[in-house]
Length: 315
Ligand code: GUN
Image (cartoon, rainbow, N blue to C red; front, side, top):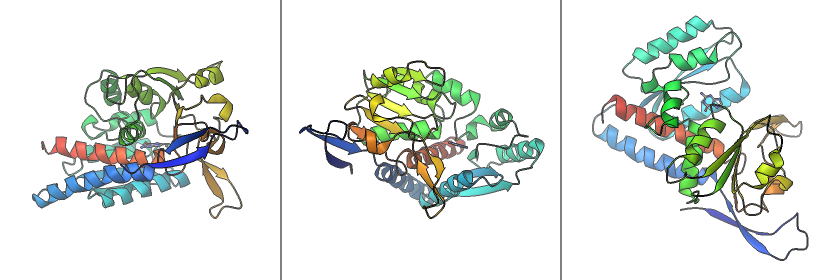
């Protein structure tokens, strides 16, 4: 297991401390490469056996910069693991009915195993209608209420890619979760809520006691200070500061916000929800941004796509 261990003086918040601690960098490049290597081996065997490759259809509406980047990365990663992908693009003023018709035709196509519609969508389109239009057997994002309900009941289903990727990361770095107090900041259907369900489930990397915090949680800092595992998924750059984190906590940073920076080549920088420079010396393990959870999200999506293919072809 290729985990990078960084030895750091502990720490900037205890300037005179002579204690040294080992901080484990939860490197998404390393963990996602391991997942992708396994997927490529599986697809190569499938193709050698004469079957077609798994096929993902990605729908992108409009030209939101971040969505363009995410979808381009999904397409590229599909190629890297032997998964065919089709990108279906619509202008930002597309009618809801047109989008729903496109989903219906992908649902009916036996050569398509997985469908994802990149979110967010323009205002004229109901995200809920779009999510519910996807055949649950092809719902590789795991956003359909049928998939979400199965997750709650501990039934086999597609796990939303980001929480799935985080579970894969915990597995890759052999992070013990049983009996720990996990605090999840954020209750979105995409990350926070499914993450809280997985961590509390009776799974190898579950069995945590979980607290979910959100915008109406009055004593957020006190709760975060109790976290053995802190998952920050609220979308506010550098929200989690050193005074919110317990010594030795495991920090999972889900944030990927573009923050304007005229000195950067692209005019922006990607910031996580955690102040990495402040928090990392205090943590026992932490994900970087970029290069952490984002890469694992793609790994989760690819695993779901291969699963959808196997179910579709009854392999
Ligand atoms: N927008 C932000 N995260 C995601 C994701 O995981 N899937 C899709 N389809 N859209 C997103």
